[in-house]
Amino acid sequence: MKTSKKLYHFLMLLALGCSGAVAAQAQDNKPGPPASPEKAEGIIKRGIEAVGGSAYLKVQSVIGRGFYTAYQDGMSQLPTRFLDYIVYPDKERTEFTTAGVRVVQTNAGSTGWVYDGATKSLNDQKPAQIEDFKRSMRTSIDNVLRGWWRSESATLSYVGRREAGLAKRNEAVRLTYPDGFWIEYEFGAKDGLPARVIYKRNRKLADSDETEEITEEDRLAKPISTNGVTAAFVVDHFINSKQTSRINYESIEFNRPLAASLFAKPENAKSVK
Image (tube, rainbow, N blue to C red; front, side, top):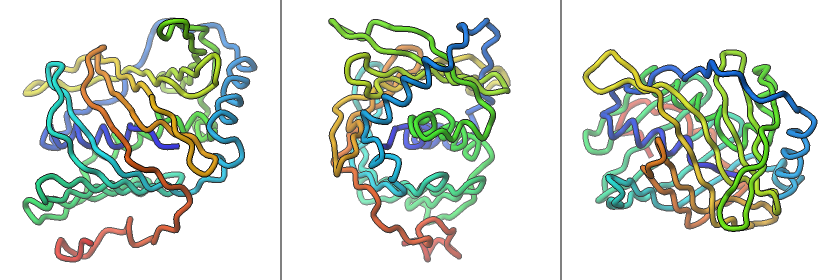
């Protein structure tokens, strides 16, 4: 199952001119909810079954195609076509095409590179982009459902039920890392499907050394099942309750063989395929 995190944050960095405007994750100093790991684990288990159970857990690669649309002051902007390749657990290549110009970002673990078709340049990712990718992995739905968080000694707790629209409620769980960074995941109380992802972080203010705390949220919609695996085909992103983007998938394919060369950095810009 694919979420918007990696795709969204890369486009935010593009909008900021890859200026490193993303700072360290925010830490929440307020007391968390009482730990209820058994209840939380049950919700996660139900979520796994809702998205396909064993078929979902057997997914090793994902190819997603669709459009990314930025929002400004509540108005949608021109959409950008994307093609996204993922090999679990930590490889991703995303290609963006606008007016015939292609931009490619590729991450593999702690390394990454970017090709800019407008300038015909190929560069290693900046530290801020690498950290952004790592955060996107931490906050993804796949992280909580596949249990990758256990390797970082994060803890899971039950938050409670929340209103989620007319006659709808979500079950919320919180994943907390030793460094204080936390993410809340909401699952439909009736169908068990992933519905929302919420977390806080610090963002560096433009032309300033100061930072501000922001709340980011993904709302997952239009679940579609493909070969027994269910994924959200629409992902709306919000910052401080204001919509900033929409990802609309046209198709999502699972377990297609992907060549290792897709993720390896080319020798030069001319070699990018």
